[in-house]
Length: 176
Ligand code: FES
Image 1: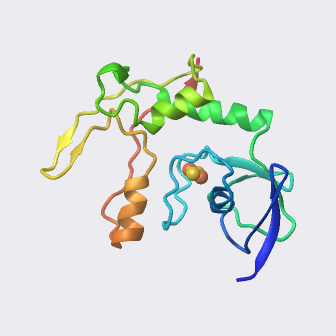
Image 2: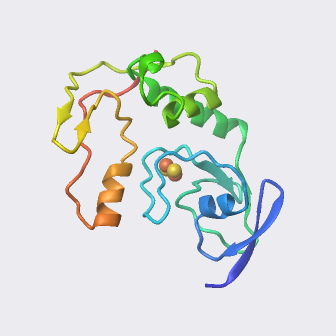
């Protein structure tokens, strides 16, 4: 693969042709929010929070590839609105127990919620029964799961096994 020059937020950088924009940005200390992408795995495209503009078009940075001369903008008013909507939906029906949650302070959901400034909710989703499961070596609490699908991707790409999958929970968000 050959090197290409691209511009991200006004910074000229050199990366490999075909490199994902998210990786190119990270390698050059440029921050793009991303929840579902795992380095060395294929893009999951579950969270959609890595939305950026490349040559004027909206693309997902974890899945869009660098091309010579590309200009990338990581934040616009539209992108900010989209990211906020995504985080609002992630926060719908999430248990409000951060004060007693072991993960508090090391929780990406909490960090992104604070960073993106979600302090009100525009969506409702009818809550459904989400009983937790203990499978010996693994405890799964669907009430805490935000369906980022990283577990599905890691299982598929790192272990070569498709035994995990997501299923519809039976409720869809609607605007308040
Ligand atoms: S990080 Fe790109 S879609 Fe989740």
